Amino acid sequence: MLLPYFQSPDILECGCDEAGRGCLAGPVVAAAVILPKGFESEILNDSKQLSEKTRLLLRKEIEENALAYAVCFISNEEIDKINILNASFKAMSEAVKQLKIKPELLLIDGNRFRTDLDIPYNCIIKGDAKYQSIAAASILAKTYRDEYMENLAKEYPQYDWQKNKGYPTKAHRRAILQNGTTPHHRLTFNLLGQLLLPLF
Image (cartoon, one colour):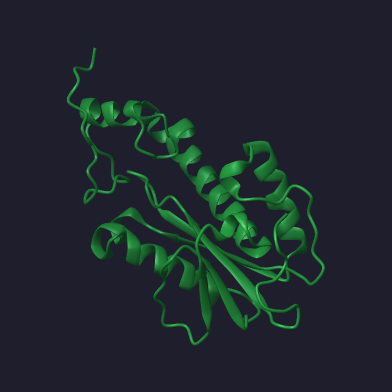
């Protein structure tokens, strides 16, 4: 059972999480979500533990019930310029800045965070499996990013992004080896990994 609050229901808490940090292509996407007091969902959980159908149902539920939410995309070009860790921090910070309500406390999924926001924050390891607001942010970040990669896959079908969403699967790496990179690949990443096997 996910916890509704980190400190108190009287404090306006905002959950923050990102998706796509380990991908070879596409943006990193972060979401910030402020849930109302008393929010309940029997199916809300870490997005990685849920089916695509359940994630999409939850996205609708979160967007309809949240006091405020925002989603931010940081492009692969910017990831290559500032590195993926800084891009993840920036994406979460920018998502918070886009909220229509200023939160009083940020709950950050993970063990590190840097920001120029004047809002106190707590980093929580595996927070998306512990707190509702972080789980909600993980749902939005994951579904928005998946949708983006599925649309890109129509333009670049050979990379199978509708299935792998840009993550480093063996098939994705073989497609890079065979077809080269696209404008959406992260060129500072090790795109081929240890892929030394013949294509056929």
